[in-house]
Length: 179
Image (cartoon, rainbow, N blue to C red; front, side, top):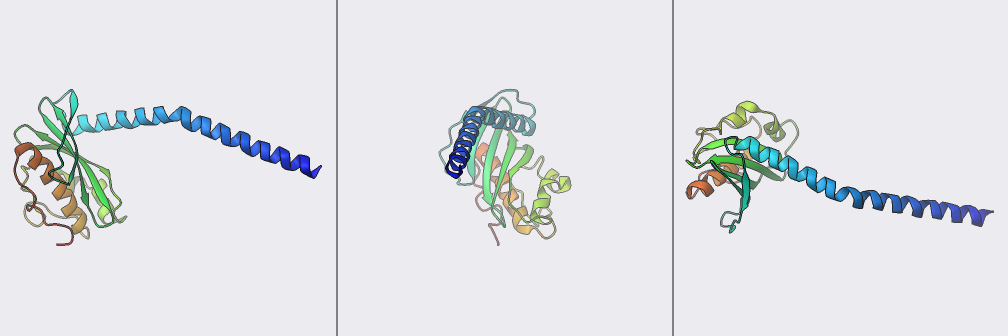
């Protein structure tokens, strides 16, 4: 009897593994579709005057820029800069005149209660709307209290996005990590 019980248990585990594998394979396309739908909505949110967007090739001149999407009225630039606890990924909308139309934080791993407040601190994020790539923490941008490094990372991302659209060299306009 013990051998039969062992065989039944092994068969049950194998069947469960096959079911899990089937579900995973079956939902992989759905997950990718949902991720694209969410990205499309975020892109439209930060550059609301544009209705259609196309992915633009980027040569990697500024290592803070990951991707570029062109709309009728400007660009949406995905940036990635180093925060205090990890990467800070933004989508920044910039119109053809080089003015920030919107931004959203896509990913961050900052300290909860400090840098992570950037996710919900509207007063901090709104400072970047209408800027032209010359944002500077301590200058025309007030940092989040206790999260200067995170504030500088977001500023660097916004300035890099504007610099892409305008062609300006913004590499030194925001203080680098920890400085």
